Every structure is written in C-alpha cells, then in structure tokens.
Image (cartoon, rainbow, N blue to C red; front, side, top):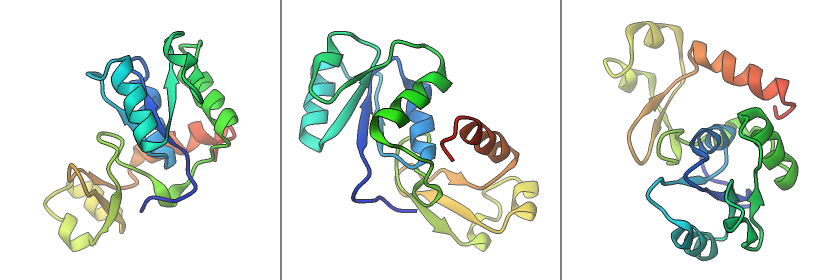
Length: 154
C-alpha cells in the first residue's frame, strides 16, 4: 500500500481524532496531532498542501478548510467525502495510528508478531513503515467495511 499522487491530503484539528483514523483507513494521508495549535495547523497545511478539517470556526476561515459542525462521525465522514470526492481506496490504506504508509509483510515474518488465530486465518499482512504496527483483515474489518458501505463510501 503506497501513497497516491492525486489524493487530497488533510490535517485534522485536535477535536477530530476519530475522523482522522477513519480517513487514514479509507486511504487518505491525514495528519492528526493533538499538540498542534491553530497556527501550527495552518503552517503545516500551507507547507504540505493539506486541506484543514476542523470544528473551530476561526480555523475554518483558512482557504480550503472545511468546518464540521456535526459531532457524529458518520456525518463527518460523509461531509468530508462529499466536499473532496473521497471514496474508500483499499490499496492506499494508511496506518490508523500514525498515518504511516503500509507495506506488504510476508506471512512468515508475521508469525510470532500477531495472535495465533490471526496468523492462521489470514494470508495477507501489512506493516506500517513508520511505527511498525502490523495489520491484517480480522473480524474488525467486517465492521469497517460495513460502515463504509452504509455511508456509500466503499
């Protein structure tokens, strides 16, 4: 799984951690750092050509920013997807924890690094190139897939 060239990139403010994780799972490069204040977010957005996603009215005045007034995650996902034309891109999934790119991990290298059941039930594994977290399509995947389909994003 690698980065694309035409995908929009985002920076989410401190109130949008769940949304940032879901955008990463959908395949979108999304910076989320609770320690960044508004000036830091603006600077990052400008320097890396990122769109700002925020719940802050002042921050939403920045060019290209999207103000999300609803606290509901599904509504937020739909609003961002509608504004930027997003769809789930399975080949571009990013680390939900740190936003790193995921690389294929040979099954034999996943042994002893994932639960035995996950190892037995899966043939494909991925590893974050940044934080080294290992991913596979476990039972949680059905819930992710179902939510994205329900929202017409997959």
